[in-house]
Image (cartoon, rainbow, N blue to C red; front, side):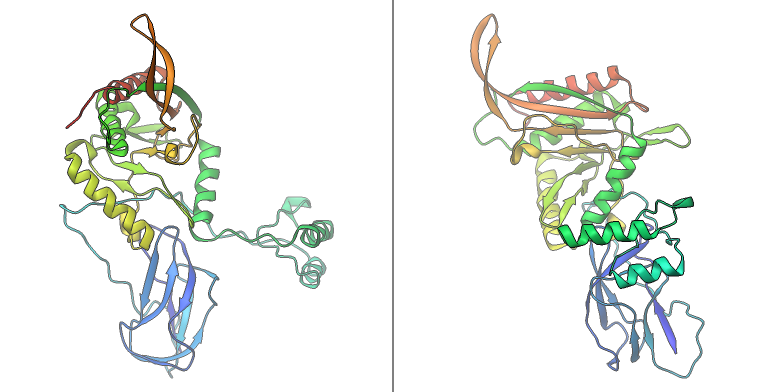
Length: 371
């Protein structure tokens, strides 16, 4: 028998969820025939067969999570194989002229092995309690019978909890990492956009303003290493754009926004959104954001406290544009304003640096035109 292990899917992604098997046990397959589709933190990937052969056994069903290096399936044969990977995924490459999109993903670790006595394990099986992510109250985190019975009662009362999968699972990990590491401070301010022409592209104006802010104050276009207490101020602005979908939050990145035309950025953003919808962004292209935009105002909300995800140090949130009564040149006027919320990691940037960034963003948004 020869095992085919889940190959390295790129960018250090440690696991994938089986979406669909394209073959069954006993099937004869050819090299490069699609065996299965799997879902990583952000992308749907097809797994091709590394060889001709007969499928002897499938490890896992749709919905199961499998880790890199674990057996995915078994080929029939007389050869006694130790379980090394018998094939690897082909990598797609893109030219420098193409858009590179990235998703900042926090490192993921395999679920820890739960400690419990045989009696407690038997109780969990009898009560149909999932112990994989259950926190034990016993010594050194060991699960006790009370833990099992308490969870069983909760399941009976409220129904079983549905485990997070795919995008939502990775989002939860990223948010937990941010909460544990970042020292966040949020600035709120309004930008007067009353001079904008009708039909102005709001997203392009925000992207242009962020580029202006990073050029005025590069300290916010930075990667910060909290363990080494070291920061890397970046010359290239790679903007992560938060995209809300039914599957969860995606944060693909437009690269080098400071040196591209607005038409080129708009074209790239359109492709980005389509790639997100179709889930066709390769994992190798889902890293590298240096600062983030969350335009939640397209849905609802005025101000927020956006979350900074390491290693970036800043995220700008834009709320719903509204008419507001305000003093202008000593008189009362009704102006169109855009509420802004800038969260920054105070370990890596000072309040003055954040305020200068915000001022540059507001000044750029106040321009009647940027074309």
